[in-house]
Amino acid sequence: MKAAVIAVNGGPEVLKYAEIADPVCADDGIVIDVGTISIEGGDLLARLMTPPTSATHVVGYIAAGTVRAIGAKVKGRTLGERVVTLNANGSHAQQRAVPAAMAWAIPDGMATADAACVPVAFATAHDCLFHAGALKAGQTVLIHAGAGGVGMAAIQMAKRVGATVIATASSSDKLARLKDFGLDHGINYIEQDFVTEVLALTSKRGVDMVLDSVGGKTLADSVKVLGWRGRLVSVGIAGRGGSAVNAFSLWAKNNTLHGVLFATALQNEYPRAHALVGECLQRVANGELRVVIDRTFALADAAQAHAYIEGRNAFGRVVMKA
Image (cartoon, one colour):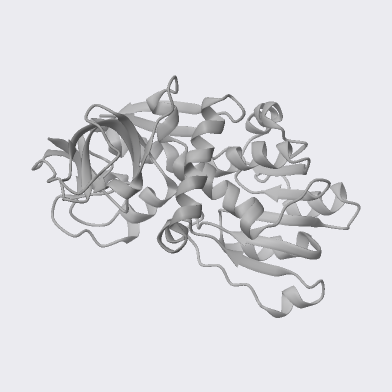
């Protein structure tokens, strides 16, 4: 099969399109013919920072397609069934082997490409807002990187529960388009200081919650916009920098800092987390929540796809066709 592989860590240019061996189906696993690969923020970090396990290492969390092989111990799966799969690596390929427990059936009528964009982004957004952030109707939330996958999912979910939604993005055009997804107030972080703007929008009270997928200075500065008992939820380091937050800065308003990684939620809270992904898939299939695919690349152009995302060009998701 063909795959986008890496032999060393680095920028998008380290991705090479190559012929590698087909994956082997484990007794407790499945193999799928990949249709659509959703490129996740974690895929970019893995390419950049996680040491490859071989000279033909395949990165990537999410791939959706059809089941081509089923392990001897697996029940409840059928050949040809459409599924979306999640694993630590292996998505950037024409075939993929995963544990059967890390697959979800794609609802009837739902596009395979849309399904590929759901498990990480939508389940992560839900965990950040409600499991970690305890967001409720009438509260105000600041969502950084609102035009990204997690950000766009979070805007929709927050608005549906009756929260006031503030979000940052890198252009006024992106912010204008986010109004259609439930955004109340947009902040262009290239041109505006988000701390100043948020405090002005809230009459200096601050927000009840911040969802931050950027890290670094953005995370540290987000403490400044928290209101009384405000919750700061950290879910990524898109800015590629470390995040130094002084615990003392949280004391005065009884604020909390909570880290979220949905992959470890699946490991430690499997029944709840697995069911949450299924719920998110159904909500998108029903039209309650929306997936926006900004651009589709061929798997052979994986390097260009990664570079496109890192250039902050996308509004919504970027996917590849295998």
